[in-house]
Length: 180
View (tube, rainbow, N blue to C red):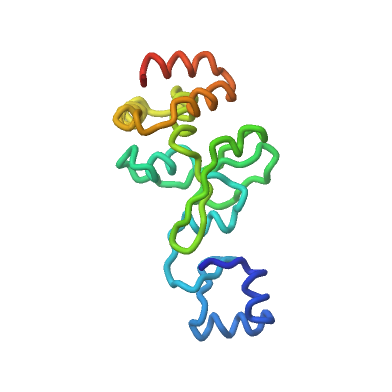
């Protein structure tokens, strides 16, 4: 189980007792402000605790859904356009409009924590939406993998997401031409 600093202090009573618990190995300090009962927790779960309103997207989500075998060098997190900049060097922050940020978000349990990640349907829209910014070979690999699972996706949700984002006509056309 993962805990924030505040939760850990509440659980142990005082900052001093929390420090002693860390020294004795009763709880592990994974990073500043993040504690766990387990000695190892994946970085994406730690980032979810540090940035609870952020949503995993792009390369991180493609890899999570096994749409690519390319392990991302950084974690891609979408945040509100008005959010503070994330200073973590492991993170690529993508600023999203407030009304689009929670569109298609799923919450998954993973290694004692929860992560917020866009659904596969939303990720198909994101792939088509950012087509010009993605290397062609990578785009092609992910697109071909989406074609293999197209019958498992909720096409109505894909269309709804495509209509909600900017340049929806271009995305719908690309969806018809390249995916369906």
